[in-house]
Structure formats: structure tokens, C-alpha cells
Length: 522
Image 1 (cartoon, rainbow, N blue to C red):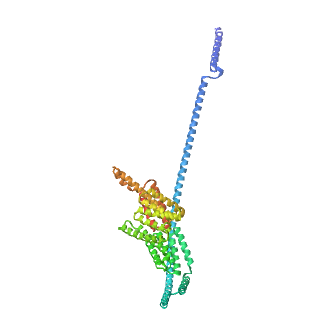
Image 2 (cartoon, helix red, strand yellow):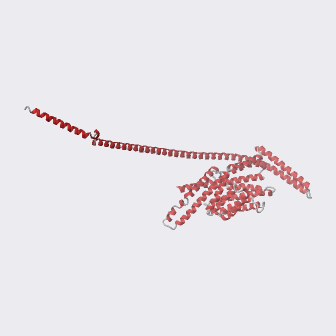
């Protein structure tokens, strides 16, 4: 029993030593190669690297999502801004259109007001002219009595002197007659001054103003000015005077431009009556021939304004154009007698131009072109290429080619005319608007011709035969030609309304054309 404790002590030491050795081995395995863990350490780093990669990718994805959200927000803002700008532009356009319509309405109201004022002024002038005519009539009676006295005295002298009067006697008679005429003029001048306080210089100023208004296309105002001029001239000169006849003729020309053919015819007939009943009629042969030509132009305008839907209009057209042509031939004989055979003359050229118009109205286009060619050659020799009268002959040549359906030739002459008259008058002149009107008609005719060719091609092909019948109107107006027709038509319409008024025949025709075009578009 005393050996037990002695034996257990070495065993315990061995166990402790084994435990220490195991601990050292464990520690060496765990902290081998420098004293750091191997597998666990690498695993932690891999996990940590993987987590960092995931975080980086997640952060990148979040950044991309944020950038995409910002781009979408920017696009939405840009789109909203663009829509707002569009709405503002549409609102601005509507406002401008409304302002333009209001301005046009205001211009119409002003034009109506001005027309009413002019009519009132015209009425007052008519009343004043009537009073002056009454006074002029009294003066004419006095002059007629004086002339009767002179004729009686001449009869007495003829009965007293059985021999042929000598030169001195004839000169004495002439002096006596001139003195009587001068006394009559003084009396008429005094009566005219007492009547209105105006002079013949005032009449000359009014005539020049009327001519200026005619050149600007203000035909109604020119007519009123000529009427005022005529009132002054009647008070001073009486109604049987060449100056009075010239003013009445100018009033007829203004009435032609307004479109009043019958009123213009009356004015020309009055002027012609005065010229034909003047003493020494041969002195006024050129003025008489010009007035005769104007009578023919009134017949021509009356033929052009005939209602082609009325029964018997063709016979009326032939009758009116024949009467017009007869007047032109009478005037041409007078004008040709004043010049050499090869000498260019503007009056002769104007007569040939008017003859071409008569042939155009009758549909005799080749004969019209022959007359226009003569007129154009003489006008160019007298006026040059850039004169509006030359341009207007070119316009009518275009009308003849349009009537023969030679559209390329027609457009060539129309555009030459349009360039000249636009440079001379400006774009808002009625004469320029008439060229735009002719161009619109030419594009319409071109569309009709091309549509007819298409329909003829389709007629024998089913089912296009039925389809062409339905689309007949639309096929006549399409493409660039339709746009050009619309442009020229609206230009002419706007100028006609503003410068000639809604009652003018040109405005009425343009209005019907605009309404028909709108129907086609709808």
C-alpha cells in the first residue's frame, strides 16, 4: 500500500507530457508556415472578395438604374417642354390668325365706311354739279343767242356784199368773231368763279390726280376724282368742249376697270357725241378714234361678262364681238392714216391687241395670236421689253395658248408677264392679281387635261372604269399643280377683295373658284 502513490506519480507526468506534446502538435498544425491559419484564412478571403464583388456589381447596377431613371426623367421633361412649346406655338398661331381675321374685318369695315363716305361725297358733288349744269345751261343759252346774232349779222353781210370779200374784210370779220368768243368765255369764267370758286387749273390738278389713282389701281377713287374734274370743266367750258369730252372718256375707262360695261358704254357714247359735233372735227380725229376704240372695248367687256349658263348667250357674244371688231377697224383706219406703213405706232398696236381679244373671246385662237404678234412687235419697238403694256399683250398670248391647251407655252408667257407687272406695280395691284388669276385658271386647265388622259387610259379597264367615274373631280386636281393653283387663286382673291371690292365681277368669279376648290379639298 505504500507503493501506490509512488507508482502513480510517473504515470501522471507521462500523461501531462503527452498532453503537452499533443497541444504543441495541434498548435504547429494550426499555425504552420509563419504562424497563420491556411484553409480557413483563404476561405474567409474568398468570401470577402466575393462579397466585395457582389457589392460592387450591386452598386454599379444601382448607379445604372439611377442614370437610366435620370435619362427617362430628362426625356419626360424634354417631351413635356416640347409639348408645351407646341401648345404655345398653336396658341400663338391661333392668336395670329384671329388677329389677321380681325384686321381683315377691320379693313373691310374701313373700306365700307370709306365707300359710304365716298358715295356721300359723290352725291353731294352730283348735287353741286347739277347746280353748276343749270348755271352752265344759262350761259349756253346766252352764248347761243350771241351765236345767232353773229350768224344773222353774217347773213346780212352776205346779202349786202354781192362781191367776194377781200382779205382785209375777212380778217375784220374774224377779229369780230374772236372778240365775241372771248367775251363769251369771260362771262362763262365769271359765272364759274361765282358758282364754285374753282378754276381750270383746279380741273387740271384733279385730272392728274385721277390718272395717278388709275395707275395705282384705285379705280373707284379715280372715277370720283374725274367726276369732280368734270364738274369744274362744265362750269367753265360748257358741255360741248374737247376737254370735257376727254374727261368723260377717262371716266368711261375707269368704269371699264371697275367692270361696269354698260355705264362705260354710256360715257364713251357721250364723249363720242361731243367729238363728232365739234367745229373742225378733223382736228380731233385721233381723240375720236381713241374713243371709238374704247366703245369697242366696252362691247368686248360686255361679251366677256355674259352669263354662259343663260340661253342664247353664244349669239349675244357673237353680236357684241362683231360690234366691237367693227369699232376697232374704224379706229385702225384713222390711226394707220397718220403713220408710214413700216413705222411703229402705239395706238395701232393697241388696236391690234384689242382685235386679238375679240378673236380670243370667240375661240379663234390662231387669228388672235396673229393680231397679238403684230401688237407685241410694235409695242416693243416703241416702249421696250419691260413696259406693262408689253407684258399685258404677253398675258393675252398666254390666254390663246391656254385655249389651245398648249399649257407649257401658256405658262411661259404668263410668267414673263407676271415678272414685269410685279416689278412695275408691286404684288398687290389689281393688274398683277389678274395675271395670278390667269395662272390659276391655267393650272386648273392643265389638271383637267391630264385627268382626261388618265380617264381615257382607264376607261376600258375594269374595275377602273367605275373607280374613275367616282374620282373624276379629284383626279383633275392633285399634286404640285393643285398647290400652285391654290397659291395663285388665293393671291388673286385677296387682292380683288381688298382693291376692287366684293361686288366686282373679278371678285365674284374668284370667290366662286375658292368655294369650288374648298369643296374639292373636303
